Picture 1 (cartoon, one colour):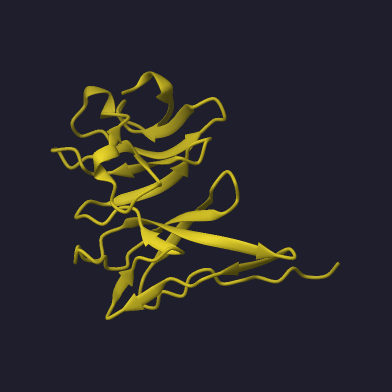
Picture 2 (tube, rainbow, N blue to C red):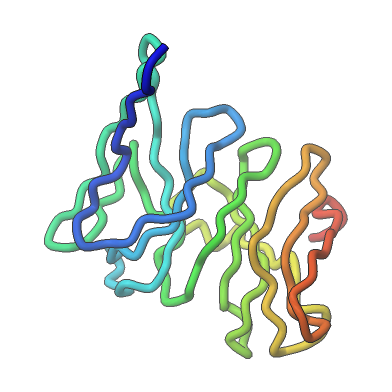
Length: 173
């Protein structure tokens, strides 16, 4: 009983760290960070992974390290995306093997939903575009959310106003 304790998982001074999402197995947290990457891509939003360890019910984390203002990839904390695009809204797949996220990688600069493996660092070889704004170059698809059977809900303004859409992500690719 009493007030639960809180535990800092990131202490990346001078950066924004937002939208934490637990992995399905509870061992990692994906989050959005404005930390500079090792590739020198600047403060644009990136997806990072933080490994979380529990011992006796107490959450522990090996902190992310900023060295000369750059997030240093390690076994406990790494940037999943380190590029010039705005990458936001991470969502773990039901298996925990990949993450869906919103990114402005489309030639128009609009946000679409993309998926990539969580195995590597900037594993763009396995990058898969899941949405394309319903054919509208100016539509923004954001905020993906997985179901346990691989349905992916997301928000899009392709109809002129924000609506929720659903796709079967297993039928893509």
